[in-house]
Image 1 (tube, rainbow, N blue to C red):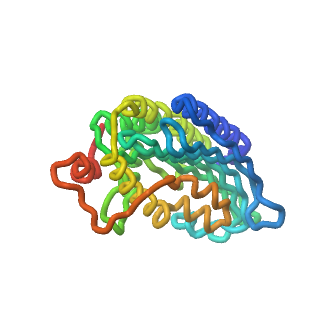
Image 2: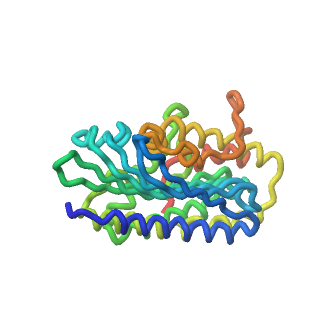
Image 3: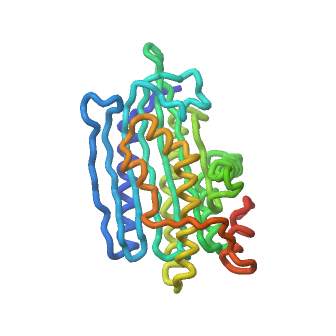
Length: 306
């Protein structure tokens, strides 16, 4: 596999972060992103730097985090070697952009997007690079047109890379963003891919860029459609309860969270996906026939939205 220039990938990722946060600031109209540039201290096992951008208390977004990181470490963490056991213990380089936006209005869904590259190789061997990422939508109230729009944009972003990519990555997303301990999907899915190196590094990078570039088209129209809907205490309580499922997945199952923590990453940046407020209720069940019950009965079921 031809080696791809890490600086080219880095430039793309930093630019993507800037485009996304500029658009979200404009969409919110009130809050601004705090820009926190960081660098690992000399002597730490993990070296590198990043830019964490966080917005809190906005008119549209209660909390929105978008982080870029570029790190190097002496040993690839176990969470990254599940499909590449031959690279266990190898020095690695990883960079990516990860975001999670938690809107204030319960009718606006939470969204997650991540694009990343990892490169690793044992001393004396040429490093191997692979790509991962995707995006997924977590609504609190379901709307068919929102689910259909999100999935169509995901499909179109992958079309140039083969007809098999959207069905494959959609199924991968459905299976990955699943709370096994609850026997329940986290949301309505989207696309997810990991350990992708088909067609060489250039093709993997192109696919990663296409997914990153499609994010705003997938999400912004949904926010604009729902942000003006009236809501009250009932909707807010349901939103906070469902956010608990989001937290459970990120802490228990998410490989990205595990990779960051296992490799000695920056905890504040790794946990920027956490919502500002959340609640749990013992054996809570929405009343039958309500929009809250419809979320789990109709929308949190893997299906062909396109």
